[in-house]
Length: 231
Image (cartoon, rainbow, N blue to C red; front, side, top):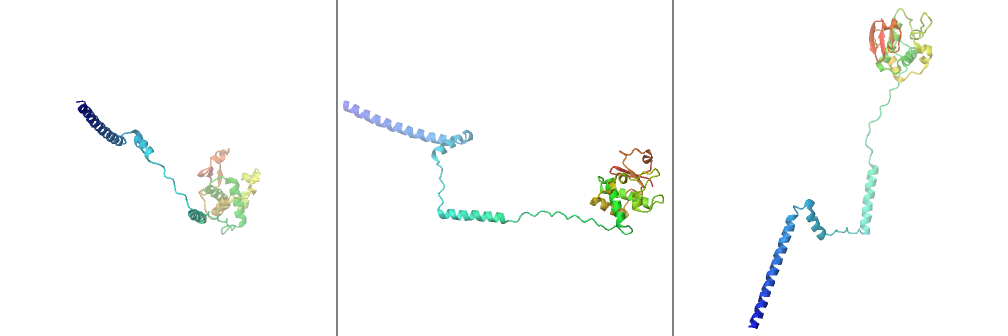
């Protein structure tokens, strides 16, 4: 009877061990499945990163042989030489400034061009090109008018009955300043017949002029800071 009990106990213990082992294996498999499914729900893939950190190991790059190093150096040197020898990107060439012609238009002398350029520069240095041409046109309109002298030089240096110069730059000496290229070009255009003033004989700056006589002249045009008037 005791022997039978002992044998029964051993059998039950063996069967229980098998069942326990079976449950352990099943639980382990269920755990793996839960871990796999948790990868898609864990925030920022935390579970997957945690598992990867335990499985994946950094792979070291293979060391280069001496021959490989020489080939690499040659390639890098070739790249540098190619970049250094590459042509620079094309840039637009700066236009060459046109030389200012020294010849006066037909019918006028180089002396006319000189004095007209100088009075334009002195009176309208800061004005647009059209305003410069207009100042030159006033001088030439006076040359053609019966009440004024008959040359560019004489018109520019004319005095009033009271002995004052018609043009202030003549009185203060600014007439002798060297004209810039645009003033010379404006003089040439005026000598060729360009007249944006519509035949005006006078011009003044209304912000600076205190002459009521000038202000009452029939206005022909206003260009820049100057009013052109009289006929």
